Image (cartoon, rainbow, N blue to C red):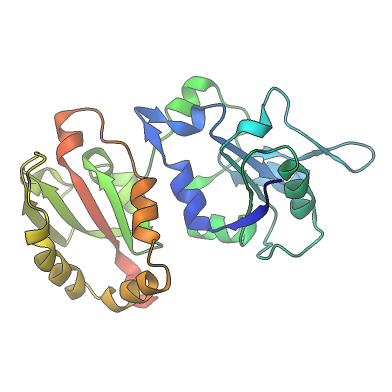
Length: 265
């Protein structure tokens, strides 16, 4: 039987931001996000696309209607602030019930709604019902490589002002065969790495220059410590990364973005 495991806020952030032409949250077997808080708390604000947990008169979890729960790739349950698998709260009970019918491990969001909404307030909502078209049209943010420090996105994301504002981005590494002059003016630091969009392109020769640029911004030590603690984090984020589809510019541009307040952490 699949187990119940913890899910970090950054993992849920990356899961919510996957897309293949359209947002993956529109896929019926991709994500089931369950809010196990009280109905009043849920109605006052919850994570985007989350459903409120339902209970019968005997105190048992009622599985979501019209959903084949057993085949859903990501089932994530959260409450207010649970951060451990040991517990007997509503989120734990709900996750254990869902794990009995799921083919995949059920995730319990570490830190719950409190931590996630503090890190990603732009994913809070009071909206309950979505049409398929609305789900397909959800905006996808850049993939988070190192929480709060390093992101990887495409041309469209890097030139979307509200995304850069939400993530507090102040610097870009623009890997492209085109100039970065198309980026929004006012960003203090932009490094252009001119690379042709071909399979033969040599990216490794630019790594030293990129590392020096990142190091001058301040958070290099913090990034090294986080990477040392979780050496697979980059591979995981890239595996979860946005598919390279769309226009010529979408294929050309990859922006690695650094959070402005990293020095203060």
